[in-house]
Length: 430
Image (tube, rainbow, N blue to C red):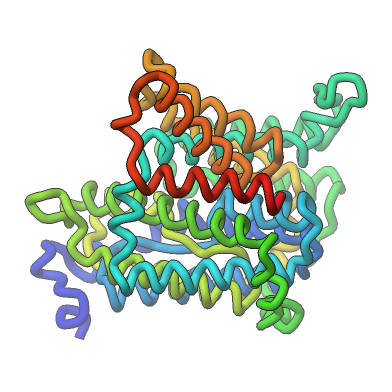
């Protein structure tokens, strides 16, 4: 049955290899089930319900990717998008978390339509590579600021806006230790580096009496506080257009980049380097986002950590299905998730931020028309506390810099269109 479903022999793999690959991928990305409830709880959502929603949304995404697209790519609520959900949309712009879930759901609907109508290729190809790389770095710097703020390492200051906190205090100090553990474990190629560091910091919190032991395994918390709570009417308001677009835009390029990178690593692209079942893979991602919003979590997306499972030999959708099964089993570990302190996740978030900043090395810093928009999105995304604002200003900077420097021919019609749309948003909506 498994051979027929996943064509194992055709891909040069077997059940044992796929199971081990799935376990490897799960261990490298399981930190999200601890981090996501922490971030969305700041938006006022029930952390127990978000924990279950995160696990189930990840499982659904993995099952669809495995059975429909037959790729060894796992999905879960995306880092960066969850931060934008809480700190950009809810706390930053004052929308309810129900409205934010509605925006996530609508972005999933649009994403699915784009995938089915094959418009996605036009969008992906129309956006300059510089802006794609820049947006990734902007999200990375945004995550870094959130990690430092939550840890108390960076604090507010009325004179200078921000300042260094007292890093000798317990929470900031433990956050720094947690990051050092992640770095050390990662350098030694430990597959569960991030999750192991989170668990060690939690044990330290228990030993010193900073957190209370509540158990490891129990029946799953109720999903009722978040299930089908999205406010679609609020999400359809004109002022929410930029929010829906930001969720869609980031998920589209994050997913596309992950699919291309992982499938190339696995040798699953054709002779032209194309992902042959891209439509099915993107549709799987969009359906996972729709399911996640209905369950009560932020955008669900493909994880670059899937590359770890590919490195372990994963070549088919069976790898993703194994990850999905493990996410289902994880819902019984809610007491453990509820004990995770902020200093256990801060280091993990900062580490993910560093990974996203790797794109900076691919920027042509000798060309001001390339460097300027990247610098704008890198700085303005965290300073405005909004991925949407970062994307908006980056597009405007790219277009006007290219035009004024005599490189109008490098600006596509679609970029002109989006730039005009972004300017109109600033003038009439923001």
